[in-house]
Figure 1: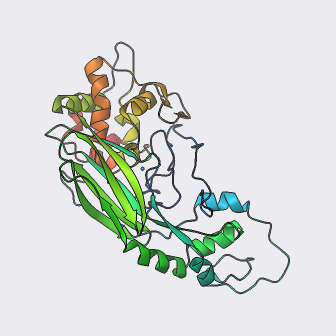
Figure 2: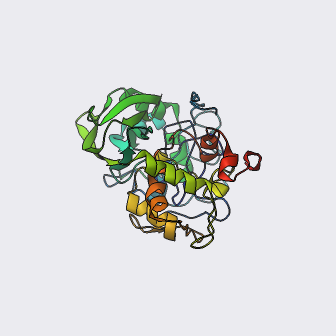
Figure 3: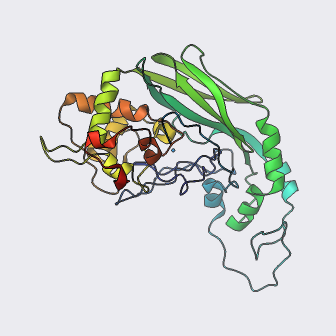
Length: 349
């Protein structure tokens, strides 16, 4: 998954729904900080079978790509790691391979794989973003391929790790990534390549207007549709949401500033990186009640933000959707010119 900055940290209300993210600017792995922790119940199905998250305007420098991880679906299929055996330790298949694992013909196993296209940071096949004519609304799409082992191949987790991190797998994946394509309505969004990796390509989509369209990722004869919904917002909504995000309130009842938690070094990540796959209703549910109505996920702590009025309430999700998906919340805060105007002290973060 995305690595860097403490594993690119948690997503507010959701752990990363995928095991192998391909973008290296950071990771979204779970939800934490002052109790914002939890586990996502609905995960991928078996990955081995057919049913198998600076100064104004900073440049974003890609960070070193991580080694790929094993799909959790593969681990689920093959069961827990067996206890170490007393038999003599076999020689490793390649340097630094795990101990006590029988020698594998990894190239042969990779050769048996069936390759499938996959969105690594989206499990809903929907993207929600916005447009207001002033602010920039962007989302990231990680589209790539994953190799699926035959159902008859049963490996333990250490063996799976060896296969999915092997040079043979990475070489095969890289070769197939060169064949993928992603297309979206150019009148609705611009599409640019942000970063490439052995597992796939990270595309950045920027809204051009409000509307709905279906994008398509393809690999050879397989395709993966992705519905894009761009909501019509106003700059005033975004501004109202930002004010509430940065300010605590006392009426109608006391409620802290969102930033008091989220832009701290360990604050949960609520950028559009993963949050873009959830609707406004679902995300607002997480904000006000701790329950995302899109998928039934409930936060591990009471999360019941209040609003002074309907304008603030209508603006909080538009503001969150306007954040840069490539930055963590505290990195976003560095673009604020003067936190003191919001009653916050920059030294606190």
